[in-house]
Length: 241
Ligand code: ADE
Image (cartoon, rainbow, N blue to C red):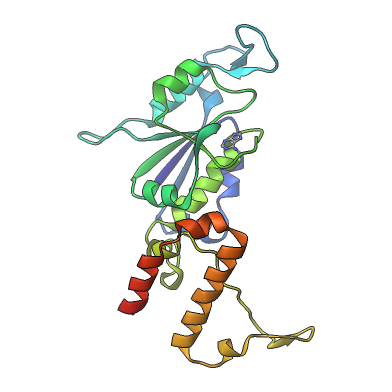
C-alpha cells in the first residue's frame, strides 16, 4: 500500500511514521510513505504558496496552483486503472471510522491532501478531492496529524503489518466492541490480584470471560457502539468455534 501525502511539512509525516509497527512495515515493503512538499511546486519567485482570501477575512489560504501541480506529480493512474482516491483532511469531511480504515486498506495507493493556514482555495478541492475526511469534531492546525492517524489505522488493516495473532484483518466482528481488561506480571500488584480465570489455563472459559468483559465495558462506556454491535454475528461466531 502506497501512501502519498501532499503537505507543506513533509518531515512531520516522514519522521512521525518511521517507528515501531509502521517502521517495520515500511522496512518490509508492506507500506510506503511518500511525502510531497507542495512548496516544491510553487511558481512564485519567493516560494509563496498562500495568499489573502477574496472577500476579506482572517488568515491566509493555500493557493490552487501548487496544490494542483503537486497532485499531478503523483496522480498518474496506471494504464487501465482507476484514478487514485484523494482524501482531503478537513473537519467538514465524513468522520473517520474503523469501517472506513478497512475499506481504504483495499486500495493500492491513496493520496492525502493536508491543508494549513485557514484552508485551501475551493476550486482545487472541487477539482481533485474524492473523499473529504474528518478525524473528529475538533479543529486542528493542519491536516498532517489527521493523515498520520488515518495512515496508522489503515496500515493495521494491510495483511502482514500486524503479527498474525492480533491481525486487524480478522477482527471484524469485534468492530463495535471495546477491548477487555488485560494483565501482566506480577500476579499481585499493590494488593490487586489478577482475575483467577486468567491463570486457569482453560482457554475456552478465558475467551468467554473476555468477550463478556468486552460487552460489559462497551455497554457501560460506549452505549452508542453497543447498539451497533453485531449480536447475531457474535452468536454465530461463538457457535462455529
Ligand atoms: N484539519 C483540521 N482539523 C481536522 C480534523 N478534525 N479532521 C481532519 N482534518 C482536520
